Each structure stands twice: as structure tokens, then as C-alpha cells.
Image (cartoon, rainbow, N blue to C red; front, side, top):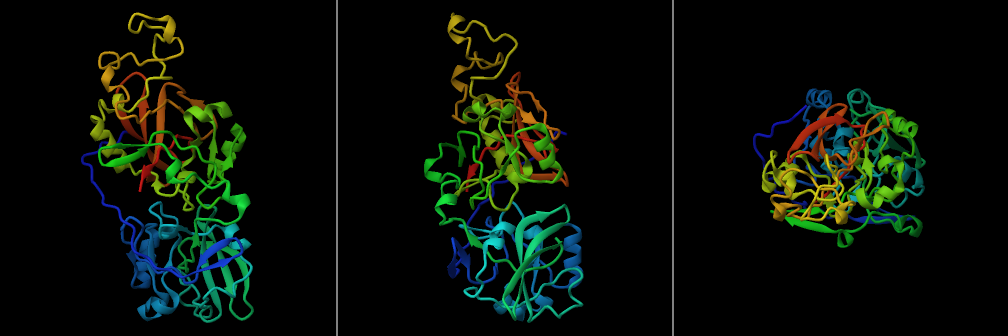
Length: 412
């Protein structure tokens, strides 16, 4: 389905000032207090539910939201805010810059709670407001790990004996959030953390700064590994479980250096962050700003595509009077030769990495290039951008979140 963009909105992003005391426990650095923010990193406000009716309405629409315990703002200083899982898993990221929402595995590694500033604030969800017995006895914190389609994992701590355990519940529950720092001290994990901004090749196009290559990481920011799907069955399994996954084009590692990796949208949208520190996955609007700057959806790709590796009808066509020297270079047959100065003008260097269907099969390799946006479309689909070998068009389409596409990041 094509999406017609009527206008492009330039959004001013900022990182809110956030002072937070920390404590190192084992190999992780944790916040000492519960999270108490009312906006995402980009400044977008979360929905504030002042009544149980507003809370239920927000959850019915899967709207990121928060409330105070028993809807009493006076509890804010002690407990912070209680968030639903839609807030902690939002691509705009609830955690302040430099932090992330801990995964279930990260919570499981935490054994010593004595250095935490713990307040047994209980929880508050659709069914919890009639039961105040948890207040004063238990503390609950969300993890970033999903359990099926409708639930998420959380950490429960009994205040009397400081005994922690994990469980899962509906995403509509309201729970505290405790963040962990992106940098991990464990040397074995540290070596696998995504590259920092200083080592990433980038290019400025208009007012935006983009990576000049497709993303090629195999871990989230916190060092957690993303599953590599090496076969059709492994890809299908990840799709069914809505598990973050990546693969090489045609399951061949040799293609990694040229095309990067293909990711499903569950990896792109994971709250642990697939983009390196200082970068993010662009929204559909941010992609469209790039496209409009490059000449628009009808002709913009000529300034963004690298001339090599795009298949044409005759890959031995004479170029500047010599066919023997270009048998390994594939040129698009349209306007590229007539307007040579426009070929990859902005050094974006887009390549035709094709895509992987939800069933594991690869398609349109060296014909089309597909890139995820961070913008969801429907419950099981998200928006993407596609460029073609036989035209200068760039289209906006949607596809199943279980599809494997390239990823290109933009500077925060």
C-alpha cells in the first residue's frame, strides 16, 4: 500500500535535563530512584491518566501512559510514576539518554537490592486498584522483555525479606521503572557493544546527518545479543515469537561487508536500542525530509543510490566507450548516464539489499533496496522506504514486522 505524504514536519528534538543518582551493583550501573519523567527523549509528552477511566481508555488504545499510585499526585515524591508497558517499549524511548529499560535477563542478574532506594509502592493496573494490599509490601518494576503479544515480564520484590522474583502480566498494568546505564563494565560484554558515534561513517544531507552505510550490528546498546537467523526455519520461528532477529543477505556472511544486515522490525523497535549511542532509527517523516531534499518521491533516489550492484536489463552496456572495463559494475539504465553528476550526489550510497519475507525467502536482491522506518502502521506491520533499479522513484510501503529489511540510522 502506497502512502502519500502531504507534508513534512520538521521536529526539534532535545534531551531533557535529568539528574539521577546511581549505584553500581555487579557489572551494571543502576538508577537509585524510580523513573519520574513525563515525556520521551524527543520531548513528546506521555498521556497522563488522572482517573481509572482515563487509564482504561489509554490502554484500550495502546497509548503510552502513566499515572500516580491511587491517582494521588502526593505519592510522586516517594514512588515516582507508574507506567504501562506501551510507554516503556515505545520507540521514542522513555529512559533518559545514556540509560535504557533493563531486560528480563538484566533483572535476573541483579541479586543485591540493598543498595537500591526501594519503596514498596505496589502496582496499579486495570484490575489492581481495588487491591491495595501490595502497597507497603511489594515493589514492581517493568522489564523491556515481552511475553507473548499481550504481556510483559516484570520484577517483583517482597519488601520484608528483600526477595526478588520475575513474573509476567498484562501490558495494561501500571508499574514503576528503574533504568540501567547503557555502558556495561563487564569486559566480555563490553567488547560486543555497538560502535560509538566516533567510528561511524556519516554524511550530512541538508539539516540531517545520516549513516553512509547500512546498519551492521549484532547486539543492542546494552550488549544483549540479537538472534541471528541462519535458516528459513529460524527466521520463521523468530517471526512467530515476535523475537528480534537479523540475518545476512541469502544467509551468506560474505554479503555483510557490502549490504550490512537485514533486521525484522522487532529488533528495530526493541527498547534496548539497536542504533548505536547518539543515533536512532528514523521515522517515516524523517525519511521523507531526506527524500524531499533529494528531489522528491518521483526522482530523489538518483542522488542517493550508489551506482554499483543495481541490476539493469543489459549489464554489459557500453559506458563511455568501454564495455570490457565495467563488467563488474552494474549501472541503472535510466537518467544516471545522462546526469552523471547526480549519481550518489549526497554520498548516501544506497544499495539494493533486497528483503526477506516473513516465511524466510529472499526477494528482489540487486533489484530493490528496502529500509525500515520506526513508524508502525498497523498491529502487525510498519512503514518502510523502497528504491528500485529501474526507476528513480522512492515509495513508502508497509510490510509485516516479521520481514527482514536494511536499516539506516540518523543522528539524534
